[in-house]
Length: 127
Image (cartoon, rainbow, N blue to C red; front, side):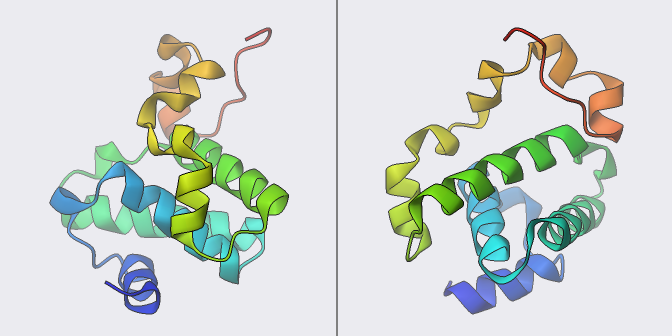
């Protein structure tokens, strides 16, 4: 799926949750950030993920800290690299293609806590 149809489907919450993999999350974040400043991108990214989870009948799958932490990493890498497209970004950021990358900053019990699901929590001190 091309960039514009993919981004439009994502923003409308129309993507199928069953086939929406981690790399698709990263791609959606990358594309949103190409079109919006971070605060607007964060709101749109979160809203769309919540819609996709709701449509799949699993609203509890949405996780605020995972969403904003990954989007922050994507934004930082974009700002440093100035990538022309997602393929170049993904090739330069293979660690972001691994859903467990946040373990570098978060202890599993903090990241999977109820509070981290509901609101953004900062990474663990000293990690």
